[in-house]
Length: 219
Image (cartoon, rainbow, N blue to C red):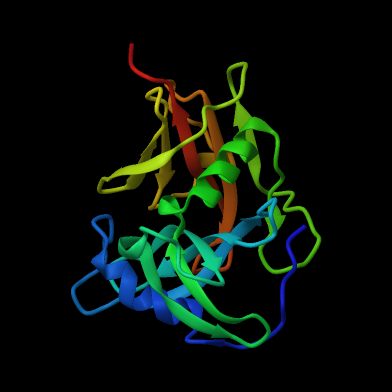
């Protein structure tokens, strides 16, 4: 179960993301930089206990209208070989020391555990409380059998990052998250699995929406 340390981070996660987010293809803000606030998210456990896994929702108020982004992150005690392009930055953790922070869509530990969550083999953990399941996160698998392994980042679009498995199954991480009507997230008809969760809107109300969907290989 995820252990949350009450300590300092230098720079903070939001400080790292303020510089990184505007460089992404799916960023919708203006050209003067992001103005971020933490809005929600959840964690997953690394079975080996080595990599921190967090799905963070941040609200950006830099543009004409606030936009909520889903940012999957991994935290490592050493650089991930071959992942230089995925590095968001480094920070000093008051307990764990230096941590390398990566875009989790390009980290095999995160993609494997996300597939496990959708399959029902892993549980979402609270973002800010140790040893606590996140009851708000729902993961649904619409077809029988486990998802294939080996998901790897394939492409960024204007709204999502698409990860492909060797058999052609596609996992779509929604980078821009929007509230579902009536708080009931509905995946697209082609989806064979999905993850949904909640976050805070700028007015203080709670929103629920899709975070990820899974789509079968095209025959």
